[in-house]
Image (cartoon, rainbow, N blue to C red; front, side, top):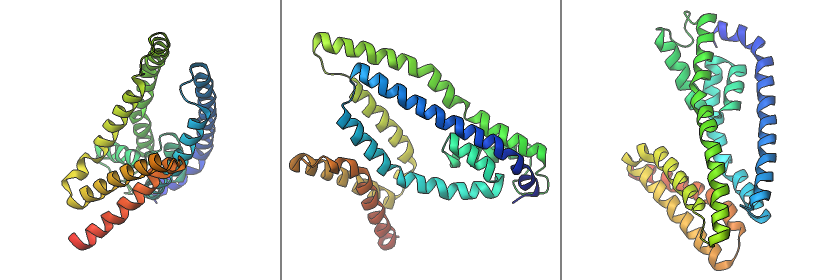
Length: 241
């Protein structure tokens, strides 16, 4: 680790801890507001909320492992305090690593080089922080209109007894995000095999859940499909090259 990073990380821990505490407080406040909003408009039942919580806890395991692996690389470059502060807020160490590299390359300095001075380190932190601003701006701009759309759509549904468009809206958004994330992997045959196997397993588990009535299978659907996809993907790499 660079000497500049080692010397400056000590004084940054207090800011990192304060920021993470504030993030936790915000999360609890958001959860409280979300539950209160759901109670008012009855968007999901208590059973659905518990099922979503279980699914979330299971599905977060895989991404958390990948975050930890990349975070170890980020620690060696910008130190533990900055890594804790940035990944604790955004949770995307790959993005933070890319922003740190862009910031240093902009002034012709390499990470962990003798030219990596305190001024460059401050520039890196500033670049990483500013790069996340669009996320927060998007939240401010889009959340309120979506809240209004949900409330208005709920009123129309009650009066005209029409099916809500919100589930389809959410599914479309999720498909768009997942499609954007995997589009670069479609060029690789083994990756295509892994993704296709995961999709088939997901479909099979859903059908099994409908047939047997075992709702708990839905909570573990993502975990099962990820594990099977990883296994088949590794077998494809081994035998297909």
